[in-house]
Image (tube, rainbow, N blue to C red):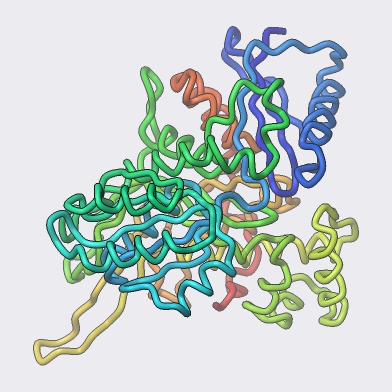
Length: 476
C-alpha cells in the first residue's frame, strides 16, 4: 500500500497513523511508549512495528512521513506584558493558541524577584509584549534590558509596541540573544492580533525546541516536524468546524483532548452572549481558542487532580477506598505508562479523566456574574459563552480508550448546580474513535479536503443516555 505516515511524539506514547491518500481513507493507527529521554527512534520503531502487526504487513512503504510533538509537555513559555488585563492577557492568548504550555506571566516592570523566579522556571521560550502601537514604551524597553542581562539562553519573541521594536532588537542582539520580532499582539485597545505571534512561536518550535527535546534524532526518517501537537489538534478543530472544498464543516464546536501530561480544550466559535440582558467585558476572545491545563494530566499530574477535587469525591465516583486511591495514584504518578487493570482501577482512571475534563472546560469557558445596581440586576459575561455550541468532541488516549467515554466527556457539559460557568448545554457528543485528531491536523497541511473527509468518518456519535450520575460533577 502507498501510505502516508502521520506521527505524534507524545509525552507518554508515540503514536502513528497510516492513511491512504490514493484511496482517501484511514488505514490503521498504533502506539508505543515514548522514549524521548533516551532515543526517540526506539519508541517510533516500536509503534511502526505494532502498526505492521495490525495490518499483517511486514514491509510497509510510506510516500510521506510527517510528525508533530508534545514531548515533555510541549513548549514551556513565559508571557510578559504591561497591564494584566490587556497586554499580558493578549500575550497569554497568543501563547496558548500557539501550542505552548504557559508556566508563568508577568505584568509591569520586571523586578529582581521576578527575574529570579523566571530563571528558576526554566522556560523554553519567552514572549515579550507591552503597550499598544504608539503607546507606552518605557515598560517594554525596561523589560527588554533586564531580560538581555540574564544568562538564560532561550528564544525571545517580541510582540509589543511597534514604535520601539528596532531598539528592542538591538538590545537583544548586542547581548547575543536569539530574538524574533513580530507584530503587536494588542495593536489597539480591545483589538487582538495573535496570529503573527502564533506563527513565530511555531517557527521557534520547529527550529529550536525539537532539537532540545531530542526529536531531531528522527530527522533522517521523518520529512519534518510540522508543528506542536496542540497546534495540529487546533488545525483539525478549525477544519472540522469550517470545512474544506466540497466537504462541509460542523459549525461551532468544542474539542477536549485528555492526555497524560495535560488536558487541552479547543473552541471554534464567537462566544458572544446568548442573552439580551448580558454585558460582555474584557478583551475579545479569539474565534479559534485553545487553553492548556498543565496540572490536569491524568498520569503526570494525577496527584494534583486528587488534591484539587478531593480524594473523597474520587472515592465516591470510583468505588475505591481512600487509602487505596492514594497509594494507586502515587504509583501512577511515578510510573506514568501504567494501564489500569482491575474494575476499580478502571473506574478511578475514568473518574480522573472526568474531573480533568470538567475543570479544564470550566477554565476555558466564560463565566456569568450577577451584580446589583440601583437599576436592578446586571449580568456580566467574561470570556466565551459556550452554551449554544452544538457539538462536543472528545479525543486523547484516556478518553478514547475508556470503557465509558461518554461519562468522561459529559464533564464538558453545563452543570445546573454551578451555572456561572457557560459550558455547552445541549450539544451532540462525539468520540474520536481512532484517536487521529493530531493526524488530521498534520494531513490538513497537505490535503485539507481529504483530511476533513477522513475525520468525519472517524467521529462516532455517542448517546447521553450512557452517562452516569451527573450529580457527581467535580468542584474546583
